Length: 361
Image 1 (spheres, rainbow, N blue to C red):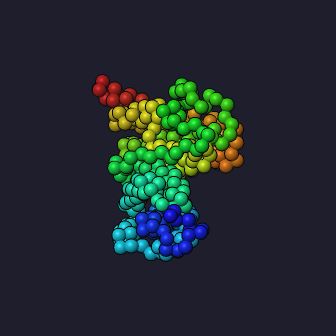
Image 2 (cartoon, one colour; image 1 turned 180 degrees about the vertical axis):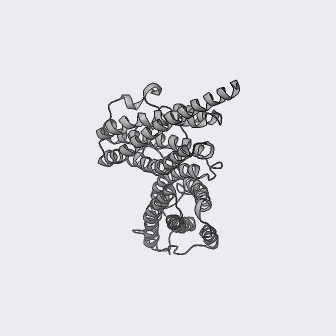
Image 3 (cartoon, one colour; image 1 turned 60 degrees about the vertical axis):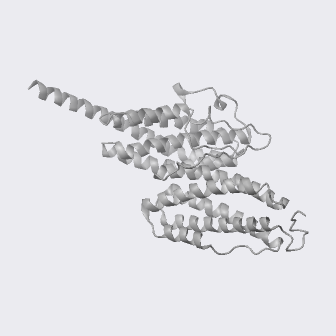
């Protein structure tokens, strides 16, 4: 018979169900331990926020599985096994950027494996309670996987072996499409999409948060390139600030998209945003700073009215507050990029004039 822990005598659960529940409780315990380590060890704000999300979500999920185990007469796992302990020990020996890369690589791999495992084993469980809890766990872990891929790309961790998995759509809500919404640029780049439709309701707020998550993702990717290739130290400093601030903000907007209508954010940019990234990647070393500042000043400039106007029209008070919190900083960085762009152009003209004079002599 199906295992209903509320009415079935302890010991009647199937062997497979019992093993699945124990494995689920152990997996949540490991994620909490690793997330706690990330909060303590990482100096990267995006990694710290990801670790905090893991501690919060997996603590709650772990309690759900432990309660289910207790009702069914099972003993919940309270210690890590040898393999899990080894993973924790290995990460405990690392610090700085090395820790960030190793932790985020592990998070991508762990969540990929967990999603596949729960999708395969969950629906075949004998207990309806196990099937239900496994299904809700998959949804959360899919969101974690998407976040893990994004943060991993920011810190240079490996995501190559991971298949992108999107969270399932909320009932009675259209499936979020990324072809027209992720990375849609404003002004001259604007496409016809949900921005041109009256925004109201939870799902519309989720789409707004999704678009800002992609805006932030683009800025982080551009900044990572500038950290490697920029020649001017002031340009590098701006890129460092953007990578740090926008990396943590990107996670916030991804979470807000998920919590408002279940709108998913993938790890891929849309066509217009990808064009900007491609343009910077193709820039010569001599022109790199100028191209980077041109793209950033234009893109951040277009974000300012989007945060100021559309942000305050959101139904969600949390989204309105997030948009307001970011507005001043985004405006300041847009102005800074514009000023640096003028300085770089003026410096280039002086160098060209000096070369010309030297050639004439």
